[in-house]
Image 1: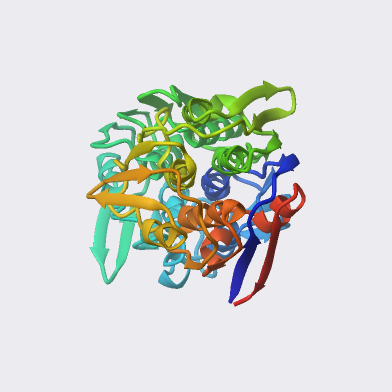
Image 2: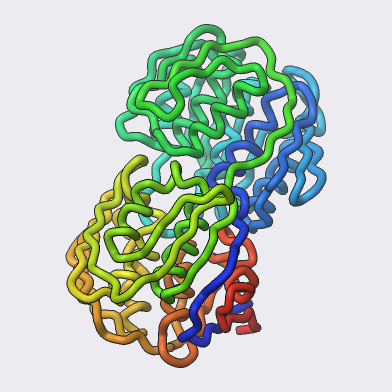
Length: 422
């Protein structure tokens, strides 16, 4: 098992190319089940979750070739039999919650899908009830037994679906299912994340008829068939945000090549409030660290609010600020697991329920810490960049699920960081 070793104190200067977005890539790869031929994706991030999705698609009978540029050929025909399977097994799904995204395409294209109830990071309950509620409204029969959800329908039909809460993967699953349903589907209280817009863009390139992605109401007119496409995956706004925080806390100067500022409004606003200088350039977003960091209050919200996936990283910034910050986590009930590890490094953080009060000012010191989930891993690496001495981050397999070679990217802009055997 690997660990990340960081020597703090270096100022980060230079340019980092932002990889394709994990949270866009996974639904797009699942969407390759829908068209009648092979689709090709470019700018695919080299991540553990993407590799897992590739294995899952092969399990379902797809031919999957390539890595950075990936071509996926789904099983032919409307109702394949024999060697082609409908099941996403527990062995794959337990490591990646996004595996549930194959359910909508399987039912829409082949009439049947069986998926193990999902796993992933242990950051709180993330039920799939909204996925199943929507599929049932579209005429599917849903059965839950032995840890699997089994969904079948000869052909889905359009329906009016009101989500109880905005759910990104739920909305994506239902959009993919509705693309091949008979008639019109309307999804209300839909998720507005850029990754939802990216999926709608790709589905429309395939021949779907989707309007309203990026708003609270998405309308899908079902079609009989979708066509294969080529598409370059959008840059990862969370990776970009993580490196933006790295620039701010190290008083560095980083150009985040390919970053889309319009996808990062909430986090860039908080960076500016903390004292960082943020400018939008032709090649991406530039972040310069200034003088002392100012405290910032943050409440995580669905997009376009502040993303929960950036909460842990901003907590490191708050721990270094001159004053008190209040961070409220409204999305997941168990997403402060990085707090005890940051406390081991000297951070002054008090948690009560879903609220963390961060008293900035104390210098952080290097320590051996343990990653508990994907974004917690990133926060510990950030803390190591500014801590005195050496920091060792253990269990970095979490990190590899969502950041492509983070140690290489940071080392290229001046960080003293390496990967080693634990």
